[in-house]
Length: 146
Image (cartoon, rainbow, N blue to C red):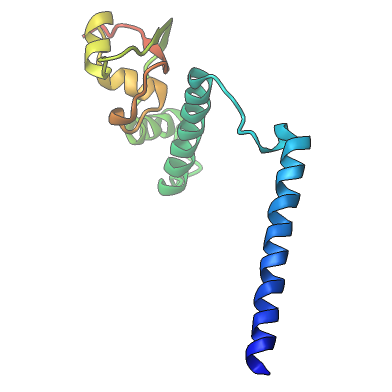
């Protein structure tokens, strides 16, 4: 008796599973847009990712750096000097944009424009240059007066 009731339970479970598959496929056929991944241009996706990484890096830096205890008599210039010492200045944007192509890396791009690769990485909020992808739009910094 126990074997037959176990068999019935297994058959019912299979029927429910097959019914679920059939229902899912029919919904998928009638509403295909709901199951397709969003098709973004790779460059646009990289821009979005770069913006999110930049915001996360800024937030992490803000959390990791304690606010300075500034006395009421401290001059505003001293506070800005302390902030500049904690956070190196982000280079100014020259307005030029470069799209990364196959075989390029931050060093080759920096040589091409006569700027520092570190400045390119800072300006674009890139923390890991090995993750640079083809099609990424990079802002080029102003040449330093070194």
